[in-house]
Length: 262
Image 1 (cartoon, one colour):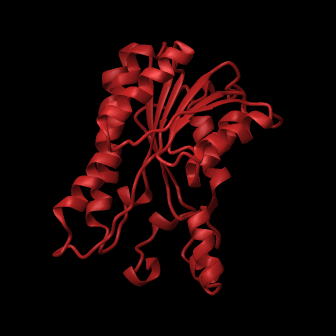
Image 2: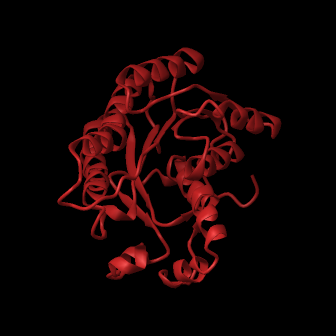
């Protein structure tokens, strides 16, 4: 891959990725594959198989396995398949997550359970399952959100799970450091996923509204976030562990009005 930073190649490395078939996850899968990695990814939607085939047609090594990160049994099966297939895991990228917003006084306990199980518990369970197969020099990257540092009304519980991811990362780096495993967090903001592009297509005026919320009048593409993720799990980022990288074009650096984000 031309223009790579020294040490940023993922050639010969096995990358395990959750939520890899759509949105930011698809950007991560593509960038890791372009950097030379073998990509093993999962998601609930079986259409992920078509995405794996697309990567293979582009010359990459890729395999899809269906995964529901809210289901501990599915996580165990996914982890076992990864280890049985490749024998080791050089990088784990915990990307799968869910967004649920709602009035603070009316937010349901069931929605809170879904947020916690999907956004936080899944990272703990999958990381714990795969760490024994991760050699020294490997890396875990937890995908969070800029809501971990700056949020708005209606996102209290979502933001709480994202803050938990960042806190867990800081502790994990000390737990796994003696094994030679780095652990970092990447926290994107508003990103041009398929869902966001559809919203803009339905309401074109939102394009300028969204741009105005950011310091440089633009917001990230999935490939920009994917490139950062691929770098953070590469040897080029060997000095980074326990860190959180905010990738949101300056959005979290200002105090945003609730009306700007809705």
